[in-house]
Image 1 (cartoon, rainbow over the protein chains, first blue to last red):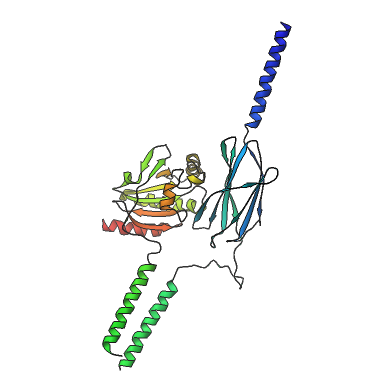
Image 2 (cartoon, rainbow over the protein chains, first blue to last red):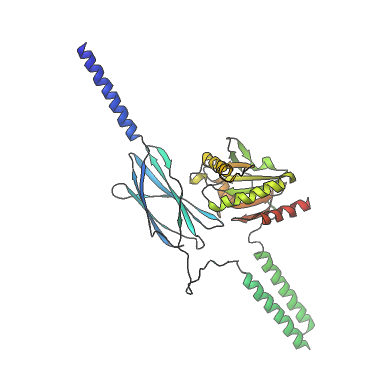
Length: 166
Length: 180
């Protein structure tokens, strides 16, 4: 009986320990500090994302980011992050849109086959200034200056033509 | 310079001007193109098609939850909903960032947040693109929000990339309704 009890206790202890270990390995990955360099990037500049992620069985980390302004957000899909030493994952991206005023990003992590997403975070972009120190947030309507130019040339041709015919 | 030469010059100039106007006024609007049908999943998990709504004027809002301009767009669409729902106008807001990880629960949370935080009921059809981003690739490749107005036969009457205010949308809808 004593031996049976001992065996039962060892068996139960083993099950409890096993369950504890399994539950620890199955926990969601923990997202640590996120470093964005520079912390206020400019449009069309390079930005480095670095994130610490603690967790077992992490097989993939993706960065999702979009470049936005008050009118529109543009889509740039999944970018795989590179694992550096320890728990640090890093990726350098190149912003492409000159009219973006902020970027919004999140991470998607595959841990033991389960995908986990973080909340989206916004990062303001440094306003671009021209040589005069003014913001270059001008209204870029394509080609309307050309219309005025063409109209002016046309009117001039007609007036000159009429004068010559006289 | 003879009068006939002046006439020739004038005609050339007018043709030139017409071509330029045609090119530049077509920057944001497409009229009369047949809209490509697509399927989407509603918040209650049903599969719907764009052509299920043919016979009504459709305002298609390609949007995303994690897109601030898209949230501002909701206020303008609410005005459209309030003022045009009796004119056979249907609004479809489709989340096209499913391929970037957005889900039905995130979309529902957003609708709930509008209700709870600004007391605004978004009382039109919401849906989600497929994970491959089919609608995104077809209708919102330039970004979100992207808005379309389809006529009752499913032709694209108007499109606009980016946030659009109520007055611009109402103006297009009024033009369409006046033709019906």
